[in-house]
Amino acid sequence: MDLGILGRTAIVAASSRGLGYAAALELAREGANVVICSRKASHVEQAAEKIISETNAVVLPMVADVMHEPDIRNLVEKTVEKFGTVDILVTNAGGPPPGNFSDFDDDESPWDYAYRLTLMSAVRMIRHVLPHMKEQEWGRIVNILSISVKQPISGLLLSNTFRPGLVGMAKTLADDLAPYGITINNVCPGWTRTERVEELLTEKAKRQGISFGEAEKQVVGNIPMNRMGEPAELAALIAFLCSERASYITGATIPVDGGAYRGLM
Image (tube, rainbow, N blue to C red; front, side, top):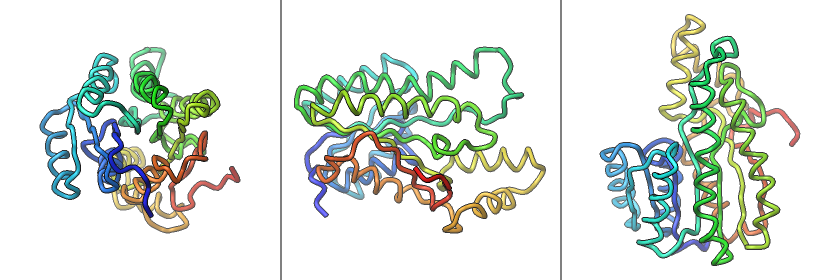
């Protein structure tokens, strides 16, 4: 299937590894110019080399912390300087610390950190790319969230609290942006084999006093497909939502979880 994004320019946030890297790689395979970022220069440069070697795409590696507005502004400015515009934005950020309600007191630090990382990073990225998308009357925005926006995950209070805010924002923006030919959608990975998930399973095992393997077995036991997802499976959906073929899909929140979510909508 020709996705119609050959020569388009995509920014993929937090993309030196995990789901962000997988999304950047898939877009590069489809012929897009890809801008990737990480807080560490060595990580993002290595990721760029891997994507180029596999796809021969044009890749711009940038050092940027998505929690810092000046970094986001610079990321978009440098993208426009090199490629002339921004056509596609994939927002992404590492998850906030795990924990239950009793683990976080009135100290603002963990709450503020999660707010800035999970919610405001996406808000700011979207704000900076929209003028370019509106001017050309074409754009694709995809937010990488979590199945927790559909079905809260035990032990992930901060994620369960702030990620749903992005769903509300995206649904509202879908109305505002449709006249400009811009779509905005959310993808919701379930348990997917990434370093972040390994960290969560390690924490789960520690809390319950069980082995890592036992913790993983508990998780997989609730997935109808009886396995974790792979980053490439989420990336395939992201690439489609960024395509010309997905021009009539906006405001959607789509699980990619092997059937683990049991709700109707």
